[in-house]
Length: 109
View 1 (cartoon, rainbow, N blue to C red):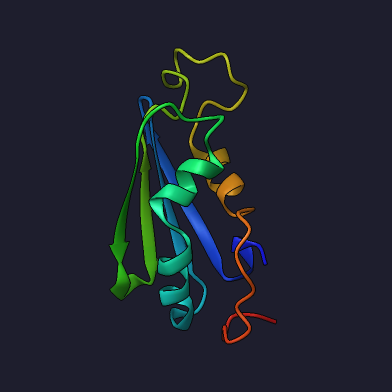
View 2 (view 1 turned 135 degrees about the horizontal axis):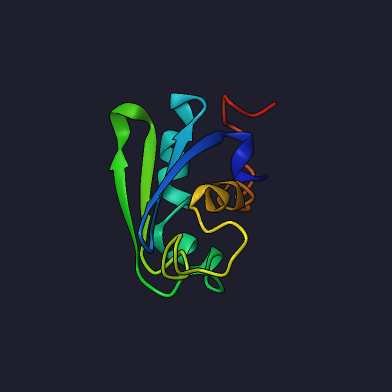
């Protein structure tokens, strides 16, 4: 199952740092997300893109995880030669993350 099946995402960027929030579509899926979408998994998912650390913050009352990716934007908007130097494309890429099947998920079809 893809992450986008049970969550949506918001993102932002400042300099060379990207900030990506993963927000459960259903609060009942938050524990599953917290278990399976770790900082290590996100770092591995973006291993060819980022050069720095990934830090995860949990916001359980919002059903959200927030990831800060350092060294993620090729030096930032004004320095990178990438076509999309903003963090917005990274949030879409993260939603393609493959999760184990969550048959008990209330957010699953």
